[in-house]
Image 1 (cartoon, protein in one colour):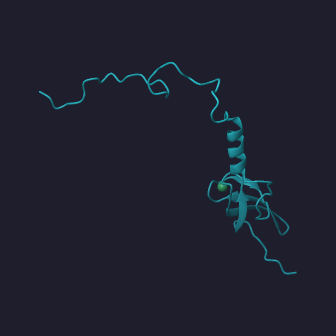
Image 2 (tube, helix red, strand yellow):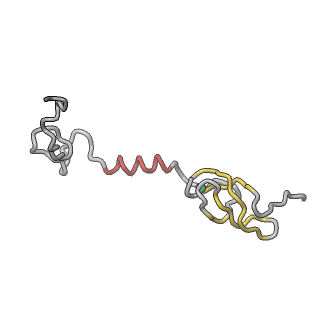
Image 3 (cartoon, protein in one colour):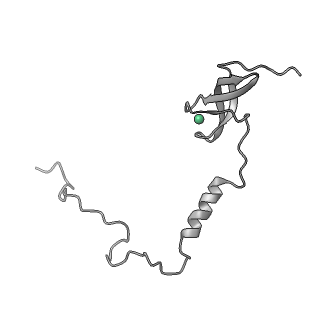
Length: 109
Ligand SMILES: [Zn+2]
């Protein structure tokens, strides 16, 4: 059992919760031969060493977000209660008119 010893300042791979990626981390604290604390070299986020493994998760967070969004959307074809009608033009957010009305030819004498 000859494990490679890790020393302070060594760079190890670990999962950064802020970057949400497996990044290079500098070793900040060691207990015996095991890394206790690391700091992400990319975002400088300090966190306990996770053993260089990705956290377990049931499903893709992106898919989860999509499901949440799609679940809130009204079904297609129906008239949503929050529909903003009545303006007549467009349908987007109300944009105030710019004061520069006659600026089509700035080089006019
Ligand atoms: Zn990071």
